[in-house]
Amino acid sequence: MNLLPQEIKENLPTLYAQENEKDPMVHIKYFDPTGSWTWYVLEGEEVDNDFLFFGFVIGHEAELGYFRLSDLLTAKRGIRGLTGLPIERDLTFTPCSLSEVKKLHGV
Image 1 (cartoon, rainbow, N blue to C red):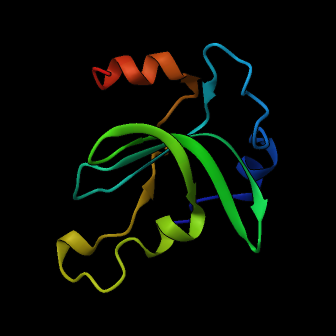
Image 2 (spheres, one colour; image 1 turned 60 degrees about the vertical axis):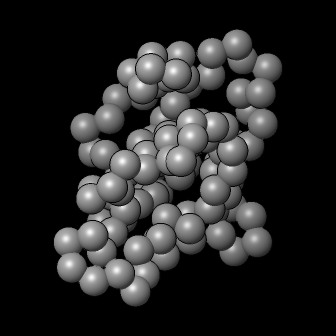
Image 3 (cartoon, helix red, strand yellow; image 1 turned 90 degrees about the horizontal axis):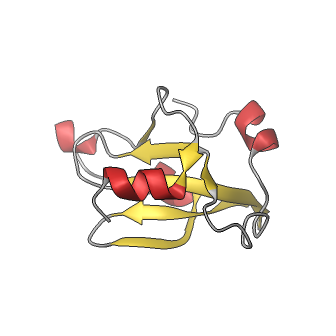
């Protein structure tokens, strides 16, 4: 699966573009199909031959932070079996506000 198609990359707000928004928009959802981690992307841009995202991450805790496309692509490296299925982009995700995402996760 292409985690970051060119069309999405071109339409994603650059880093800090939404920093003054009270309730910024979430544009992309990535998830671990065999785990509980989910990454919601608010902004992103190419940095140092990688793509740096800023978003809301549901993992050990729910928090805002930065993560890279390379992190998503290599997160399951070396893991075998069903738990080794790669990170996916939710093709059914509809962009929504950050408050809607937090409400969905009870945060």
